[in-house]
Image 1: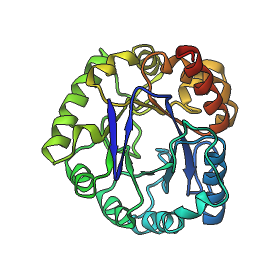
Image 2 (image 1 turned 45 degrees about the vertical axis):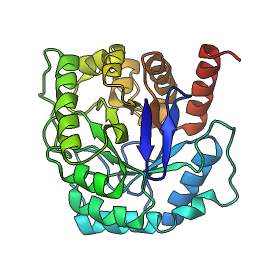
Image 3 (image 1 turned 30 degrees about the vertical axis):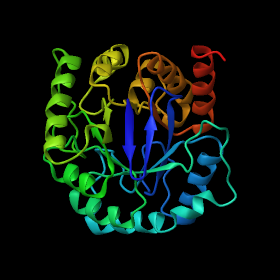
Image 4 (image 1 turned 60 degrees about the vertical axis):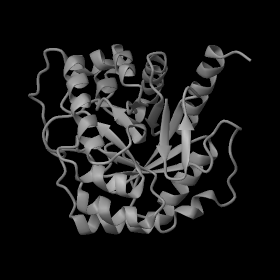
Length: 290
């Protein structure tokens, strides 16, 4: 299994990748967003210093109780960060010999007008698309720019709550969904090895569906494509532990990470990078003794 990026390829199996979250917005659900580009760059730099392999930057919150920002505003927020991405590596060195270096830059957005603009910066290597790929436009943009595409499982439009969605067999439906979207992406010219799958925890899923996804995550290994598990501080953790404050859910996040790693998760999107790096390094050492 491999993940093709612009100018380089990441080979699996290997220690799972830790993806740090940088929110260039003022309404992140976990309260860690900022509209100050200097601050956003410093957050990214600190995450890289403690082991992040990937930095996932977003300019709009996925929260469904917040209106979408305009395309122009999202582009403006992205532009300030992307134009100065190289500054993240100033005075920072790899934490160990396994960390991906230089770290991969991922852009978290879904509207094709935004995607077309930000890919022009030439430094984005992954498009983290939470839009569930309703058509082939983002796949075509990724193919044209040789950028990897993350396909997230969901239903309906982003930024709209889907609390009433019920699943008979959520994993069977997810497998069908990914088969369909992979065909769509490949028909648009995207290499199958330039794709990441995301089971979309909390997106059009309630507690039991989320728990089923985590429990049966190994079923996605049939695709032989890297699987990202974006479980950090999710509502699911808050519901199980009775913790309404997202910032208090980091221990629960690590528990979900550890369980998902044994079920084939290859990339973990987290707020608390230092703890996640320690967890994956310990678990990898246990699984692959020297």
